[in-house]
Length: 379
Image (tube, rainbow, N blue to C red):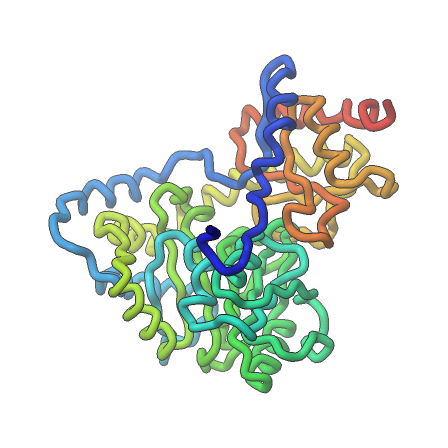
C-alpha cells in the first residue's frame, strides 16, 4: 500500500549510480560536481557559538528564541530590503527543504489546488505539491504573469534559481506580487542563494519593500544558511512573510514538535549578525566559478549567459547534437560527475548542472581534464 494518495517521482540521483561507477575508474579518481553540498569549514565564530550554547537541557522554543528572532528580523532589513517598520512574521525551520516539501500541505492545500513552480526547478517543489494532493504545474516564472494559466492556488519562485542561476528583477517580482494579489494566489519565494549574486548587483527578495510595499500578506520568503555560511549540517533556515499565516504555521509546528535545537538557534543568530564570513565564502566560490567557466569554454560548451547568481553553472552543447545525458556520460569518461538537466524538469533536458561546491584541489583537477572533452564527444 502506498504511503500517499499520489505517487511520488523516482528519486533522480539514484539513476547516477552507473555514472559514478564509471567516473571512479578514472586515474586520479572522480571529481563530483553534482550535489551542491558545502565542503568548506564552518566558520570558527559559528562553531564557537554552537559550543557556547551546548548546555541546553530544556526544550527550545518553536518560534525561535528572542535572540534568533531579532537576528532574523534585523538581517531581513539589512540584507533583503525589508521595510524597517512592520517587519514580517518569522519562523526558524530545520533547513529549507523540509519547508519546501511541506508548505503546501501546512497551508491546507489539497485536491483541486494547483501549485505552480519554475519550469526548470529543484524537484522538491513538485514533490511538495504531490504530498499535499495538489496538482504540480511547471511554468515560466520569467514570463508575463498575465500569460500564466488560470486556477493557480500557490506559486513557488526560486531566485537565484537552482539549477540555472537566473534572477528575477525587482520589476518582475513586483508584477508577480500584484498579479498574485489580484488572483488570490499565495507566493512562496525560495531565496537560499540570495547572497551569491555574481553578474548582477543584487538578487532581490519578494519581501523587498520595492516589491511589496511593506505588505506581506500572501507572501513568503524562505532562506537557508547552508550556502552562505556552510551550515548544511546545522539545518539552519527560516521562513518569513505573511504574519497571520506564519502564526498558523507556528501552531502546527508546536503540535508536531518541529524544534530547532537551542545550540543551533544561538549559532544561527551569531551567523546572521556577521557579514565578514559570508563575504569570505563568496570570494572562495567566485574563484572556483571563474576556473570552471574558463574550463567549460575550453571544452567548447555553452554556459547559460543568464546564469548570473547561485552555486552552479548551467551548461549545454551549443551545436545541440548532444543532450544532457550525453554530456553526463562524456564527463564521466574524464572522471567528472555532473547532473543531467532533466533532473530539473523537461525544459532542462539539453543541459547539465555543474556545482561550485568542490574543494579548490578538485575544481582545479576538473578544469585540467575538461579540455579533453571535445575529443570524447567526437569519438
